[in-house]
Length: 299
View (cartoon, helix red, strand yellow):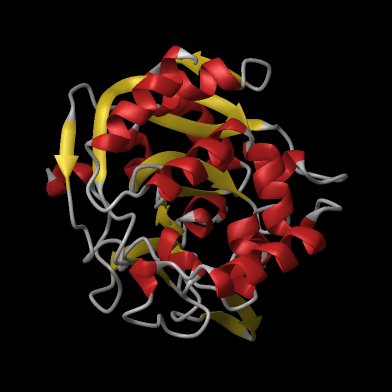
């Protein structure tokens, strides 16, 4: 057994509400992320067959954790796997932490019953891996190496089990990847997963054409939640050039004589802020949405 596997199992034993099946699920997910996510997105030929098998298994062996309360329609899958939108500076904060931190029960930030903790051990240990969503597609965005794994035991596990698709990087290199992806108009998300010890483990840099979570969101599964901010435009500065309409990954901006922002669709990612040539946009706190994941404030 690999050293990182032993460390993952040891950490699992100290994680509350984490079952043996969660451990198996987490091991499979982290050992074969490209196959797992390709099947989950429906890109892999096995997707339809395995979907039928898992649906049947779910009916035969229901999860005891979900028997007592049914989640709202479309929310069941997202209860265990979801992303929190991060503006660039917030994302850079998460890869700049130098000491272990533990912030639990962040329902005000990540509104789910499971997978809502930030427990970072050795947060200066960071790895970048090839994006599983992009890797599973015939025609995908570039570059591939844009997904950041943060902290232990996840970084060591990924480096040991995916040596050809991952590499260790510094905090400065991680911030550079985040800045480069922001310039491309891609959105940073902090991802949480029940099977990955019920907590935050990665920052993905996503585009609506490749990202499985964004695809699920469009299909009615609320996997992605607002940064806690909403975009506003200064109509006096705006020249209605349309750059923001094309760059908005969530389809929240339209041009009908003047620029309009659909605040229900806006996720507060800040792409419009960075892409606008006139600097007409700014993000503002939206109290109607989950609170921002600003780690310095939370700690």
